[in-house]
Length: 589
Image 1 (cartoon, rainbow, N blue to C red):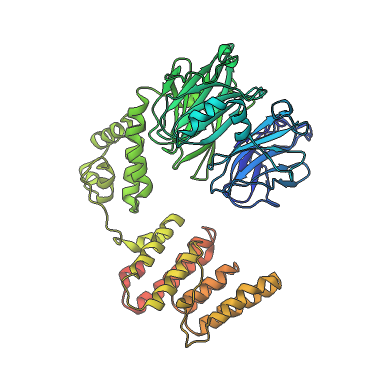
Image 2: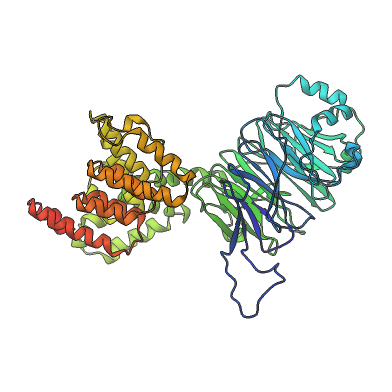
């Protein structure tokens, strides 16, 4: 994520697919405000035309309105002109997997001795190559900055060649005076952008540098660098450093502060815009965001609401205490760091909370998940949940209520010897749950077929269930019986039909669904219906063939929770169960 400099109420977000979202979370920066119109907090537009692969890095131009630089998982770098909806890819790219680190270099005519390099973008890939692009001539070959750095720092580059590391990440300061590079062995370099002379080196870290960010504060220049172990170093670049004339600067073995607390790799670092205090936020693969006092070297806030790796950060322009954090859990939170003040040791807080949080996420038992969530809440509130529970039991419950099975299982949520519920225990209760319970049911059903000897039918069922969960896999000839009319040629025709048009493809797909139903390949028939979003037809097909379990699972996955067809399916299944003398199960439906 990155803040849009031309609109303080807008955030640019690389969505992890072939698109960029512009989120207008506030109308603060709009000059086109309509009278008496309520602002939509979720208002957003999506840029996708011309983009390919996962967009993993994004940077808004500091002065040029509407210009975004981006990089994707394939090593490609480009620019998006959002006002004209124009995609401008650079011809040269990094020939390694992974999104290159990118930033804007501003005017580099003097440093590169090239009058065309008035407005530049810089990228550094995992191949160690640094490209400088002329954004006004995107098809022109970029300048290899490695070669220019070598020409201006011969002795230093000779010593670097003896190392097996390479540059991995870069960051240009907000005044476009300095550029920092982080190496795969933890080395940090700083060069002047006007002369490309090395002015600062630090070797205090020993692991891959994953993130860098600059801050001008109290007449000092600060650089934060985060590494793969979760440590963050706060460096101070002095005026004397910037005027450095030594061929090989003496590496700084100690930073101003080492900020320790994260247990996994740093993913992003961002300084706040405060002018009276120095606050820096860090996100990590340990699921946490921490806000630090860079002068005191202390953690002041801990944000623990994300349920997976936190990938990116951005401070709010209009309120320096508010951050946005985006995670692999697909949530973006807007939060005030003062609301998440950290008391006590950060390390003990993270180490105590993380295992419980992870257990809660991976638990498949509904009861166990509830217990783990209560345990997590108890830890986050310093025992308040358990204290309240004990008070309720002792003061408000009578003897009969204390003996209630369901109640006793929740009361004993802190017992470590609580038996893990069998994966198949009370399996039918999952039908009454939400979409997550149905996903779990499908997983159980799918895994139960792995021991079957009928390989063809096994794959048929597994394939259909994968498609029900949107885990699309490639069809192979082994999935079909060569003696039936469901031959590979049918699927080849279906694969080619989109070239003719969407209507033709839909027609052929529906015909194939009916054909598979007539051949009693019900699961593959349902898969064809689902592929063209004919969910009701797939459910009716299962219902007609008395496959109520599959019909209910599909309805829960694909239809709104209050759709009347779900209750109707339960009722019809109950009638079928009564015919088979399964009265107790019928009564539960």
